[in-house]
Image 1 (spheres, rainbow over the protein chains, first blue to last red):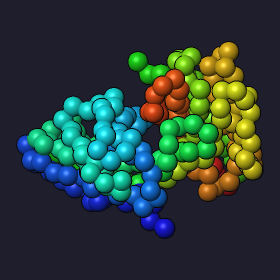
Image 2: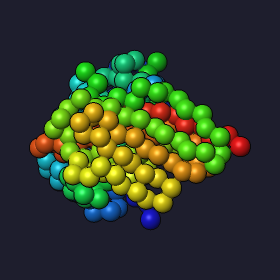
Image 3: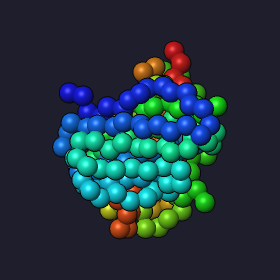
Image 4: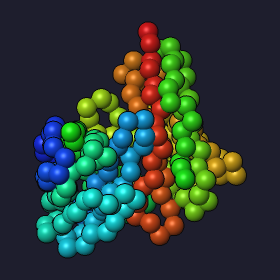
Length: 115
Length: 112
């Protein structure tokens, strides 16, 4: 009963390094999302996907890339890490659009620091 | 432009009393509203939701009220318990979007 699994839980990067945040879900959800949460702020949508092979930008996509080759996995790529990308990153999934009782299920987050 | 606002960053309530968390929104296209609860070092978990065609939804100790004319919703927790201590996020979606817009959260502390 894993739900949404994110790895790693913590990471420190140097400016200019790259990394991939992993996200996998075992609920056969079509929709997947990446958010970032800065201190004292709400969650901001970075990218989302409505199914394998389909991705789209959210509110704050600059500096990030995503891919969705399978239903289960939705990795988030940082190519050139910048201090402004220091944040907590959450991956989420849902079966369909945000209608009726289809809430998004969240992973426990990846805390990323760029130094 | 913050479309979903939670103007109270924190709230402290005694155990057994009512907790009322407030949320305001600006976009009249929003037609579905959700509350999420978040403990430290965990992801948000869905708590309760309400459609714009309703003005109240209840689930056990949790009730959400929606006032569309005022673009305001509130979450009532009765009675409050220490385990309710967490950050509560209001979120909204609507129109043709598949996206949720989150508020900044309210930290609730329930003390004995």
